[in-house]
Amino acid sequence: MVCVSCILALALHQAGFQWWLVFSLSGHSALVILLLTSVYLFALFRGVGQAQQIQVEHSLTTTTYYMGFYVAAPLLGGLAGILGMIGVSDPAKFLLGIAMGTLGTTFTVWVVVDPIVGLIEMLLPASRKHRAERLAEAEAQRRARQEKRERLLTEAFAREERYRQQWQNKLRPQAERLAALLACDAPGFACAEREAVDIGAEAWRLGGLSCMRQLHDMTIAIHREKGHAKTVDYISYWWDGIGDWRKLSLGQM
Image (cartoon, rainbow, N blue to C red; front, side, top):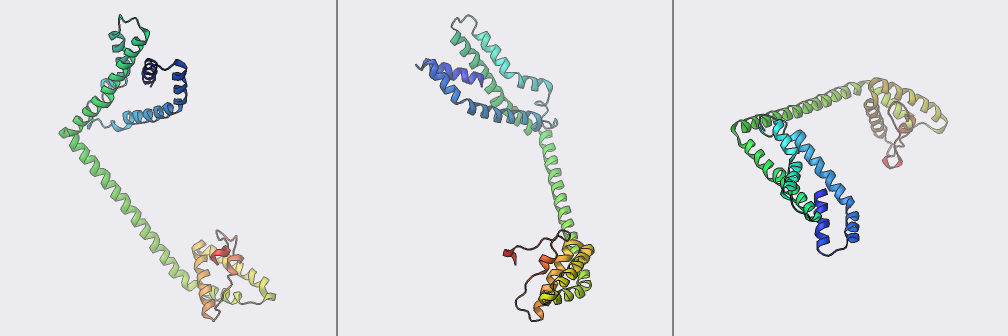
């Protein structure tokens, strides 16, 4: 990025722009340069650190010598630029030669040579065989995890259904009692609330929130079967705070 900035600054100056304008443009673009540098360094170190760790598939690019050459490419290009500009007395041309040598070598090694070498490595028979085996193993592991998740979900649903069937008989008397409490008059409302709270707490101890929901649904169904077309759901308020039960909002009633 320093070399690019140097080349741009010299090019703008040679085009006739004054130095104060060149520095002004560079200052406004500093944030963009910082962002691009961060993204590029992330891609570079991610590629070097992860993509080429499989030695069987990348027998050359994973060696210490190649990695040293890869990382040192900008420095080697800068040194080549210095050697090529020996004898040049103009400081601007000298800096431009160093910058062009650095950029040229870095571009050639990182953008041209490295992808070609990596492609050749992937086309080798041993690399292709290992990659196919690795992908097949990864796919098998993915299918195994998927099948395990589906099996666990099926077991959970089956277990929940067994619990619901068991609770259906146990909760029938409590549901009928709660349905009767919903129809109580104003004087008996406080007593009805205390009894409903005891029933809700017992349902929580029996099977948690799922059991309470099933008892609630059974109570509402029984209350409507007895001819009450309009049901005021006092149970949601009576049970508020029991375990994980929370009262319904007005929009859910």
